Length: 277
Ligand SMILES: *[C@@H]1O[C@H](CO)[C@@H](O)[C@H](O)[C@H]1NC(C)=O
Ligand SMILES: *[C@@H]1O[C@H](CO)[C@@H](O)[C@H](O)[C@H]1NC(C)=O
Image (cartoon, rainbow, N blue to C red; front, side):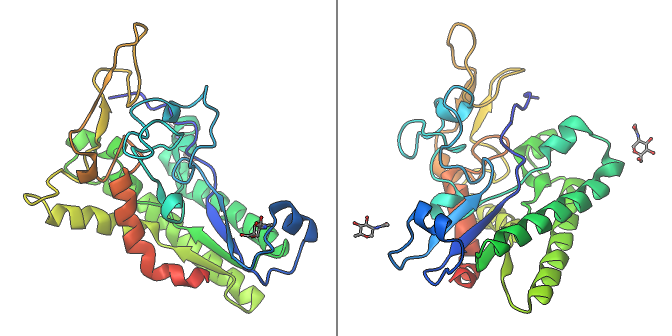
C-alpha cells in the first residue's frame, strides 16, 4: 500500500459566520473589513477545507494532477477541483493519532481530549463576538480509500467508522451543553458523516448507469509501492494513474473527495445550511 504523507490532515475544523450585526472586537472588524452588510465566512480547517494555503514547496496539492478539473492546473486544493469550502465548508482527521500513538485502546481517551479542546476553542471564538458557529462533524473515516484499500474498495471499515461515530456523539453532547450554557443556539453541527454516507450510497445506486465508478475507489492512485497521487520518481516519470472520468468518482485520492464527491456532499448538507444565516 502507498505510504501516506499527509501532513495537513489533523487540525480542528469549524467555520464561523460573522453577520452584519456583528458587534464585538472592533479591530478584527477593521482588519477584515466587513462593513458592507454581507456575512463573512471564516474557516479553520485542514486539507478538506483548504482552497490553497499550503506552501507551494511543501505540498503535493500544488503538483499535477491536483486541480486538473478546476481551475485546470494545480492550485493547492487536495482534489481534482473544488473542495467543500468552495461550496461552503470543511472536515477533520485522526491521522496524527494513528501516526504518533497508534494504540487503538487509547483512542476513546484521545477523542475526549479532542472534544474538550474543540469546546475550549469554540468558547474562545464565541467570546470574540462571533454569533453563529458551525462545527463540522467527522467524516466516516472507515470509508476513506486509505481504509477500504484492504477490501479492494468493497466495504467501509466499520471499526474506523465507530471512531467517527463516537467523536460525533461526544461533539453533539458538547455542543448541546454549550448552547444550554449560553441559553441560545450559538453552535450547530454540520453532519459530514451522514452527508458522506449519502453521497456514497447515491453513487452506488447509480452503478451501471451514467455514474458507474465504484464510489469507494479513488480516482488518482500511486502505481507502485511508496508512491501516491501526484508523485514522480527521480527521473520525473509519473508514478500515479488518474481515472478516465473524475466526475464519476467520489474520492480523488486516498483521503480526499473529488470535486464531484464534494459537490454530492454539499448537496446533502444543503438543507442544514440555513442555520448559518
Ligand atoms: C464595500 O463594497 C464596495 C462596493 O462593492 C467596495 O468598493 C468596497 O471595497 C467594500 N468595502 C469593504 C471594506 O469591503
Ligand atoms: C495500549 O494502551 C493500553 C491502555 O493504555 C495499555 O494497557 C496497552 O499496554 C497498550 N498496548 C500497547 C501495545 O502499547
